[in-house]
Image (cartoon, rainbow, N blue to C red; front, side):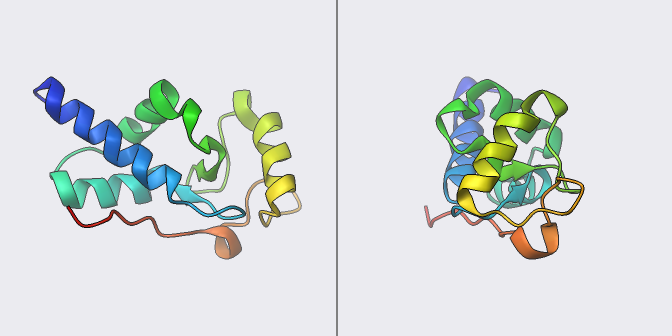
Length: 110
């Protein structure tokens, strides 16, 4: 990202992907990075994580997880409550059951 405008567009697209995840489903940082990367040609899962940590409070952030279905421990309790309320499939150990809950993000045409 070289300009403020490019950074702002990246943030907007990441949040658009996160907002599009339906209740009871999840996507991954990597899946969002792939979709946004197709559009902008840059970024990765860590950058998506940074965007979510910095700007994601207004979206359903718990629906964006690591590839193994977990969240950072600092968010675990709050996310678990949201998963239970939404009926998100969970594994016996408490992480999201990715085989049942994964949702592929998309971006609208622009």
